[in-house]
Image (tube, rainbow, N blue to C red; front, side):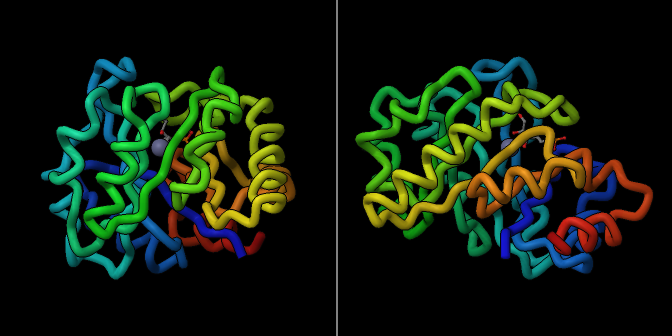
Length: 215
Ligand code: DX5
Ligand code: ZN
């Protein structure tokens, strides 16, 4: 059974608490929190105070996706009792190993993400240390973009390495996931899938989450 991580980037920020309650009702597994700084990506979303406003509103944990420069400076801000994963970008971390250890030292699961133009081989020396690898299937910065098919091959490569080396990181995909391509990404080896516009853009959000969870 895969995990569905709806991204609140596509939720109604005026009714965020109601929106997360809907995804919980539908059976979502975790809340994907997209943090953008206007530097690493060409868009600004929201920061830790907005995420913390959701504390206690649902029983769901947070899957924090930091699309920011200097993530070390902000990791502490995102730690709450509901924070399960904090993921940083390979491309944003000069000392990736240190950053991953820093996250783990705080009792939080650590993830690393790669952009569409970054090969899996850049993660070779960190895969043993991470709890999650997030493959971007769009260029990060915006919700509602089209899925980039090259991400599938990266997922397959990661699944192969994971098996061959007996590692236990989970494979997540993010960007352009819909009911039409979810089957394909799961077959490639995805264990956790992010969906933003495909969930919150639906007329009936609760039903849309249920439809995803049927796969
Ligand atoms: C992209 C974000 C994604 C995005 C997904 O920069 O990291 O999480 O919100 O949105 P959709 O599912 O609409 O592509
Ligand atoms: Zn994301």
